[in-house]
Amino acid sequence: MQERLSPPRRPIRELPDELISQIAAGEVIERPASVVRELVDNALDAGAQHVVVRLMSGGVRSIVVEDDGMGISPSELPLALRRHATSKIASLHELEQVGTMGFRGEALAAVASVSEMSLISRTQDAPHAHALDARSGELRPAARAVGTTVEVRELFFSTPARRKFLKSQATELSHAVEAVRRHALARPDVAFSVWHEGKWVAQWKATSPMERITDVLGNDFIGASRALQVQAGPMQLSGQIGHPEAARSRSDLQYLFVNGRFVRDRLVSHAIRAAYEDQLHGSRQPSYVMFLQLPADLVDVNVHPTKIEVRFRDGRAVHQAVQNAVQDALAPSRAHVAVSPVSAPVEPNEAGPLLPTQQGLDWSRPGPLHPAPTAQSAMALLESAWSPNPWLGRPSAAGIEPLQPSPKSDEPLGHAVAQIAGVYILAENAHGLVVVDMHAAHERIVYERLKAAFSEQDQLPSQPLLVPHTLAATAVEVATAEAERDTLMALGLDVAALGPATLVVRSRPAVLPQADLTELTRSVLSDLQTVGSTRVVERTRDGLLATMACHAAVRANRRLSLGEMDALLRDMEAT
Ligand code: ADP
Ligand code: MG
Image (cartoon, rainbow, N blue to C red; front, side):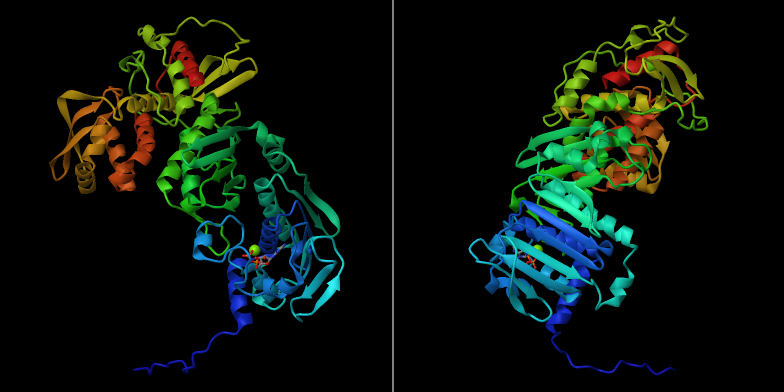
């Protein structure tokens, strides 16, 4: 047996100050861009109206940030460099109400521990500026106007391991510019400029929030997005939400600000993503700028050293508000859903069964709609779309209907010309040809109807089955059905266990008289199983409705008449 080698025992010691700062720096300062972020945060906290960032070698050789803020008095200059020294909070109570970008008193100490740093600063009442060299501690008179200049040279010179992780100058520069861009979006009232190697890189003049978004993200983004401005309880949401068709392959155009701070938040990004539902193809990423403003006591900003994450007191309310707001913002553009350029790759035929025929769906029933309180505009749109369906007015429209030849159609989606590969509708509008994914289009329409029916009485009307439908089920499906019985009922599905491996369906959603019950039940159960708990079901209700819609929508290879296709196009435009 091998003898166990224990490491030599060493005495417990307190770490030296410098090392503590270097360890802290490891968390806060990852690359030049992190320094830029911290220094600009400080400038903004000092009330600066102009912030200038000068970089050399992508910021590795030097980062200089100049501001015209309130400055630091000479007696406090050395303190500014001390760890846990801050002018921004003095108590736990103040931490909970904090409105400044900084409050940890860590950044300058951390940066100073991994670079050569100096501060030059002048306050309003000082006759001249003072410069402090962080390494030597030397304080000497200097010249500059009121404000502060922080110089950071040779970042990570003392921590070569970290330095090795740096990427090319160009990459570091782009990260640094991105850091300023985020600040620029958050603070349109402040002017920013960025220089690299003495050359001008970016400049944003003080302006209105809308102009600033345009200046930072460009006209293309503005042209392909919609404004959002909503008050939801104590929360205020504003920003620009990109059209689904302007979605990108990367998530590089997603800006979320919580109380003026750029953050990443899975809850909010999930809510935004959910608002797009099936309007985004595959892994496409939506683009957006969203500003969430809420009382400081409803959000904890002290959960991450770089403050890139926050914790909401009522995450569910935030999720709901964001999803509703984005849905509303997108609603008027939904006619664009699933419209792809003619060059879109035509997917191979899915040899699916012929599913529900339209005649079975009683969509024509005009009924009063009660708008959901937070989705008024979407509901208003739906209301106007809830007109007798031409399709159903002519239930015999199984054959080909005479086409109204109108090549210069002014309907946005034009008129159907043909069905391609059993999957797409080819239509002609005033601008040319459009291809509509028939299943996606129909799914959306069914989805909106389900949603409308649901919001009318907070459940889907159900229709008892004359002959109960039984299906084979796994043990998990049976358990889920029993645990989620109420939710299933609310969705119009009366599902019960008939044995350890059999489920019986006794009623179905009245709005989906033709959907395949086995498939519908299984997919809803699978959703519920993933969600896991009834408490969160409401949040995913729309997801459940979407699943149901998917199963009820026309499948590939179902032949549609031109009339049916046109009706689908008109419904699309309305939805
Ligand atoms: P924090 O921002 O969390 O307070 P920092 O280490 O970033 O911690 O800064 C320490 C202190 O130095 C700040 O609280 C502030 O008083 C002062 N300070 C730093 N940068 C500036 C600046 N650009 N203008 C005025 N004061 C500054
Ligand atoms: Mg700071």
